[in-house]
Image (cartoon, rainbow, N blue to C red; front, side, top):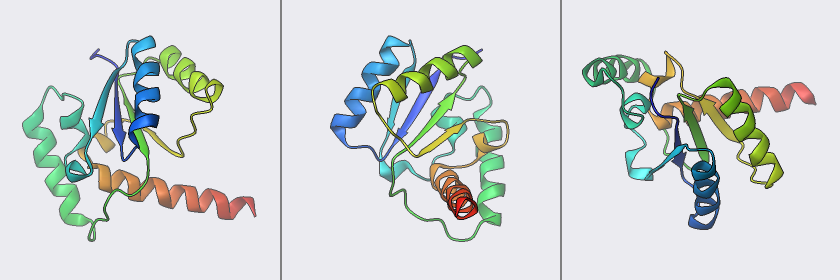
Length: 134
């Protein structure tokens, strides 16, 4: 298993410093992703063992997608977290009142997506969830 990694998108420096401190306490590698790298595949940013496959598959998925949108909201992506680390990390986020609406776990499918694609999908899921609650 690879090192637990947290990709951090579009976060202000004070909140990112707080999140990075939390990562260090849990032995998670925090990785700041500049907005300019929103098109880089998630799998590459987390240190994929097969970077050429990630690039190839990412290109296939991007060509099927309509025009992307820029990353404009905080988002984190958890990669290579054990179940216990995942649960304790989310619990700690709640305890320190660090709310981040767009959260994802890297999967075998979304590792080929870029940050822009993932954020677009998370926003769609959030909108569907919120409309179902009304």
